[in-house]
Length: 342
Image 1 (cartoon, rainbow, N blue to C red):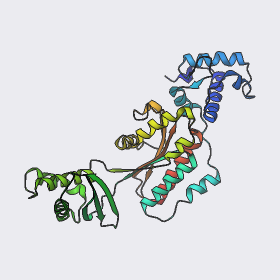
Image 2 (image 1 turned 60 degrees about the vertical axis):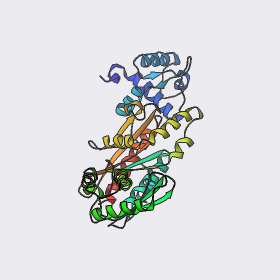
Image 3 (image 1 turned 90 degrees about the vertical axis):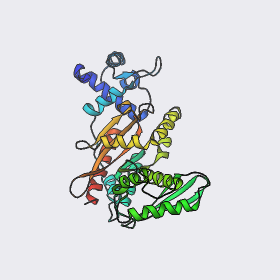
Image 4 (image 1 turned 180 degrees about the horizontal axis):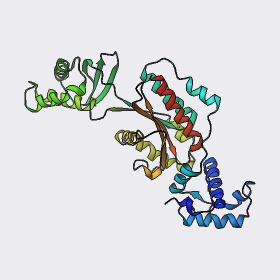
């Protein structure tokens, strides 16, 4: 049941102004602050009574005794869904987003979109994109130090990717060469995902003619490079989260940084934004991943020339995001990226 249906128009106006003021200032809002708002033409005593009722309804809470009120996550959700007026993009903002719309490769378009999103919203940006399944031209293992090796992937489309993997210390160079030769003989002209089942089957059934160390390296390299994920994640603007956060909330930002390291979980969250149309908003504990850091994600899918959804872009920040401003920026950026991918 929508709690807003149970309160009168005056209470809605007070609730709306309280949330809007909180999103602007980040501070608990008291009745005196609201009574000074000329759009609310009731006494401070009346406002206090309304705020008490809204608190009982679970829409507001007091962080400290005798403090003002803050919206709860439920309150923010009801505000976003039922009371918020989404702003219009200015011509300058539209031009800033469209300025990235140049005839570039997909990776560059997405990288620039991520940077522009972070800059315009002063938050961290997230871009989820499908991994290219282009055929491989060559794969090579290169020792970089004790217990570390680099996997160099050269694709038929000219793209080169490097992945760092952990390997046994004192790994002989013959194992690195052997692993590369074995994979090149089976992968050249095919994607890694196409042939990994065959490779694992050969090793499992001792048909690979590899010594134990080299076989282990091949298994590790294929698992690390191919994995089970079909998506890549771009994150930009982590530092802006610190710039825009009050000192008392730095611990929440630290937890958010830890959350962003959980790449698989972030990808799962953004994948949820692919369902349906338009912008999706996840507030605080609505996402298990960001429940402790108290963060919100605003995301929208983007499409290719066939109108198929091929990725998701968005921003992440504290629940005190300027939703009315950020939502149209995310939505229009997704529209521009979709246009470019045509």
